[in-house]
Structure formats: structure tokens, C-alpha cells
Image (tube, rainbow, N blue to C red; front, top):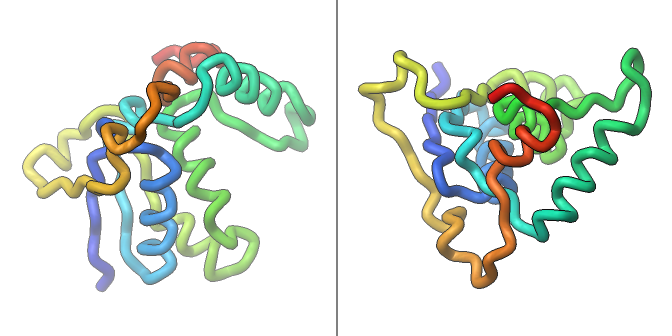
Length: 142
């Protein structure tokens, strides 16, 4: 039986959480990430918005590549980039990861884990943007 880890994404950097989630998932643990819209991506705000629009505009609606607007799917897509998702092992690991917007009722009484070295307070500059803000700029109805 695999263990379940519930990560509270509030005020955490997406990339640093994604590396931890990908590694734990490859080791056989189920990962649940809550509050995805309150996570942050570092970098210049104008560049982040421009890059997300560019990625959504490339490709076609039928063949992809597919970049999602909703914050939970946006975070899961970032995690997918850190997994060997085209191999059977990576596909199974990717299915073990679930992302949620807000706090689902089933996790209200569970113990939430936060990753200390992934906190937004640890970065020295002020150039960052929340995933929820990026989603709004991309047209998500959050």
C-alpha cells in the first residue's frame, strides 16, 4: 500500500514543489496538492503572461501541445515536465499526482505538509506571480 502525501501549496514556488512531487511519485507515493491557485511562479510578470499566451497559441486545438488555463491543471502540467511520462513507469507516477484548487472537504481534517525550502519568502527578489493570476490572464474562470 502506498502512502499518501498532501501538500499545501499556499505561498510555495511551483517548480520546487514539482520536483519533490515528481520524485516522491516515482518512488510510489500518492501525491495530492491543494491550493494550487495560491502557488507562485518566479520571474518577471510581463514575461510570464507573454510566455503563457505564446504557449497556448502554438500548435492546434486537435493535436496540441495542450497548455491548460485552470490552475490545478496548469500545475499538474508543470509536474509532468519533470517526469518521464512517456514511459510506463512515468505514466503510472503521473497518475499518482492529483492537484486541487482550494481545499477539498475530504482533506479538511488531514495533516497537510508544507515544503520549507519552497516558500516564496526565501527568494530575494520581488519578481513572482501567483498561478491564479496567470490563469486569469489566460482566460480561466477562476
